[in-house]
Amino acid sequence: MNAIHRRQFIKRLGLSAASLPFLMGLPSLGLAAPARPRQRLVVMFSPNGTLPPAYWPEEQGRDFKLKEIMTPLESFKDRMLILRGLSNKVRGDGDGHMRGMSCLLTGIELFPGNIQGGSDTPAGWASGISIDQELRNYFQSKEETRTRFGSLEFGVGVTDRADPWTRMSYAGPNKPVAPISDPYQMYQKLYGQLKDKENLQSVLDDVRDDLKKVSKLISPEDRKLLAEHETLVRQMEKEVAEAGRQKLRVGPPSLEEGVADQNDNVPRLSRMQIDLLVNSFVNDMARVATLQYTKSVGSARMNWLDIKDGHHSLSHEPDKDETSQAKLLKINKWFAGELNYLTQKLASTPEPGGSGTLLDNTLIVWTNELGKGNSHTLDNIPFLLIGGGFGFQMGRSLKFEKVPHNRLHLALAHGVGHRIETFGKTTLCDGGPLNLS
Image (tube, rainbow, N blue to C red; front, side):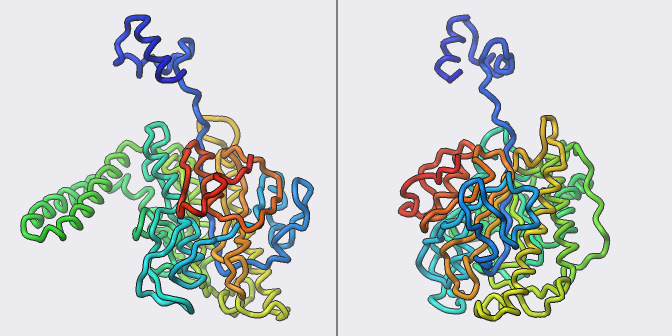
């Protein structure tokens, strides 16, 4: 029943508008809006392009066969949607890796800046919000979908270096969101405040008082920056208050102790982060998450695969170099295996308070900053969707012709009921949301 009909109902019975919130939940009155099932989004990133012959199925539609890279996901073939032919058409400053990474989820140009890539002009951060943060804000704007954090940004092997190669998530123009690459730090973020609430609140009280004192001594320009700090303090106070009310449905996972955030520990770090991610969903701490493996130009050495070369340098070798191609195949297949672990965890975890599993209401998007490493192409960016909850028809392989990836982001927004008409660069949204239903 829409708002007009509700007002007529109230008027007809002589009720006050104040009573409506108490009446909304009574099914026999027909006032309750149909509840939208819980929806979640995970964006998983792996770098340096893919191997097209070993990635894209030859067949289209429902009758397709997975190529070797995606064979670890065979048991979820009927729950995946493979999208070939999506292009990152954002132009402007920055080299292919920079635009590939920082325009991947924003769909808009980088600001001019002084960060020099391997070629092309220098650039700065992205000039717009990323789709994960757009959906986070949408969920957080409604009481029924608001969660403690809104979104969580997980990293695996991401370096401390901050530049357009290392950031894909943006809270707004010039506002990159850093992933947390240390699982112990993420554990503290998720569960530590439950224990340290009083101490942290005391610290925040002091900080707030100090900011007020300083505000009288600084310039108007600095007061604007200080206002942003005060907003952050208020947000942290809100998180502390919510942490005090937080009751975990399921206790935190037991993490292996003493695993350093180092290259050779990436496989163990990956599983620790995935376990934390799934647990955060079980406890409804967030509806949006990103899982970023290394970074654009990621040079991890996959020693656990008996590969001593850096991933980035391997990705630049020519196609005729069979040895390098075999190593890249193992690397990309390993990433697919980690995606399979995440998918299996979601599929085996019951949906709290509902029917089915977490995977039924969670859509995972596995993507990359490049279509192919040695050409730096931004065409045919790998986009593999797996899971459910967004109303897309899964179990298909689709092929498009250089469609701007902005239209996929629009489809993601519409899939959760966020009916925006454009996202990112407006001229790249012609045609509207990608039709995946």
